[in-house]
Image 1: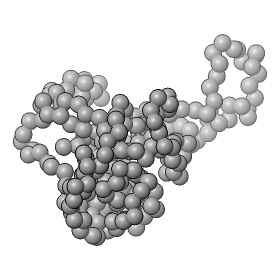
Image 2: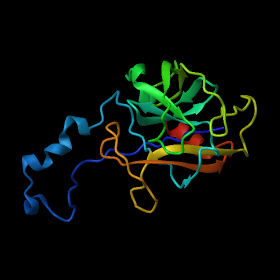
Image 3: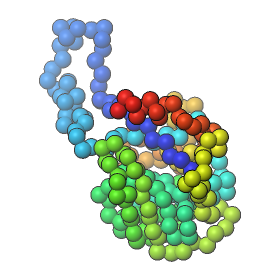
Image 4: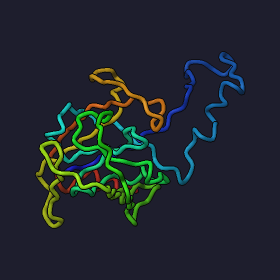
Length: 227
């Protein structure tokens, strides 16, 4: 079973002050600091949180190892990741699809690289979880229904779902997908750019990392208490 881990990051600004210098020594002008107070640079209530789109400590894998992984395209370009539930139904996260017209979306299956694929499956229905909260990303789930039925093959298979009453403790989970390039330059990357992630280099190679689930999760329990 796949799990998506979403990490919030801090908003950055375009220019940083040098703490070693005083205002008198630097003599900042109004134009120098104007970008720091630009309305678009400050968080406003109702904004969708900025998420880290990097699969950390992941290794390159082939799609046959995770044949349920699909690339959701927006105007042909890779936009998000989904898991295949049936031959025409996919599950994904909800927040990228807010205010996105359905006719801009399509899905590609069976590809190792997110910038490849000649067959686009037409998305005809997009259902956002009724309890989805765009402020906290609670119930961040969406279903995508495509028009075409996709035949199963070695690189295209539906994901196996676990029974809701079965314990996950001790089971191995995977985080698999496509994300941004490593900013440290330590990982091989074939950088691509997209208008949907401006200023961020996208890595089209499929990567995956696994971990063992431990319940109860003390980190999650502590997070809920401080909230």
